[in-house]
Picture 1 (cartoon, rainbow, N blue to C red):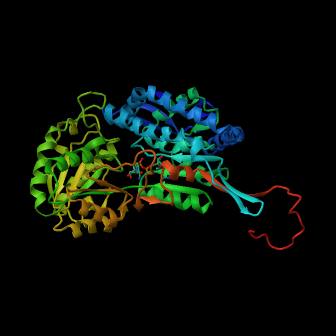
Picture 2: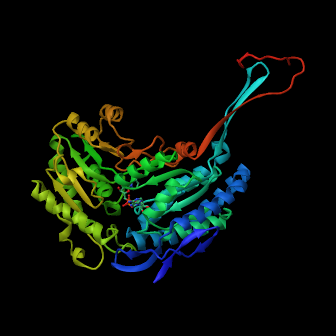
Picture 3: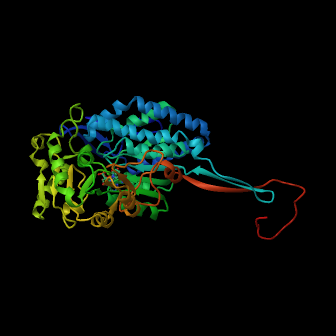
Length: 496
Ligand code: NAD
């Protein structure tokens, strides 16, 4: 069985803890790899290596760091297919989708290439007589990122691009379910000129996360994953005095007003609910048709569902692959039973797809109608290809659903009415809003983050907020000797 190990000090380091976990190809159900789980001692050793690399890296000039980021962008781009293949074979998503996630992640690397501009501070000449003031931003030191299974290439790029470019040494703890991409990324960063110790990969589970959270030399932690773990990471990290951002789960509502273009809305709903088998934190999981649009919209979606081609992620004909593990697939399937038992109408049941009974972790696209807010299929983040339809009588009721939901990652409205869309943008309680765009993931030069239980911490991910998160500010007040104005003054320094 092929091993997936750690990357420490610029080389592969086999695990020594004796603890490992299985990695499967979800399309076949066969275990393909064994991944090492680091121990507390291994984490400590990796942090020490990163800490040693920090002094030189933070002193490396901005132009050199920018140059390395350009090279990293190029190296990752050239290896987009190879990276996508690893992602597809361990996560299950189709290759085009996996390569798409690499492309979206690269936006963050492109952004980080501009680090000389992004690190620029302000300068106030003559803030006081003979006194100038300027601000600078400096890196934090050793920092860490812990990532979920659903974007094994993109989410690490959300984090490390800005973290490294700003002069930190970054430790990645990938998901143990699909850890392979992290090692190719490490090799490519090395090829691009990232010095040894500046980028580290520690494979593992809770043991690694817990040690990173409490290690005194780890100054900031970025986390993306499910809400219960995100809350835990935020609480533990801040308890230890660390800077933490923890992006969490979601239940994204797509509101469709009666004046919307039905075909456009149906295409968008199918793409956003079933793309990547619904394993996206920005997937549309709740459709909210308002008034009369419900029947024609649901009919249009039903018409499209049988045409979604489900199969092996590496088969060019496939549009949707399997779910990540058998346990997760079975959990997703269980919502078909509970929804029916709680009074919803299961319009399309993913268990009826012929691949459901095969060896891979497949589940067909599903739609549940007449869902209410008390049902489990509404209350839980299912994270599978399941679209729940909650019908609303009015716009007010629809926006109320979005705002009353405990999550607030993304939301979308489909309408031709600019005034209604503007009102929705004004009042909806979510961090990312789409207007006739179902998955409004911000481009790399904006920042990504939800509201409510979709994010713990103050700062959003990547873009300008990412630069802020990975650096700390310093303000310098300076006066240069001017024999003409020098005198003894014991009073409190005041602006003059
Ligand atoms: P997860 O919470 O199970 O795992 C995320 C990370 O936490 C992994 O690295 C995992 O090893 C680690 N982890 C798991 N259990 C832990 C524990 N008890 N203590 C400490 N660490 C632990 O999430 P997942 O299933 O890998 O990913 C799917 C979830 O991520 C979904 O809820 C999805 O909405 C969310 N997600 C959110 C965003 C966002 O930006 N808001 C983006 C992608 C995914």
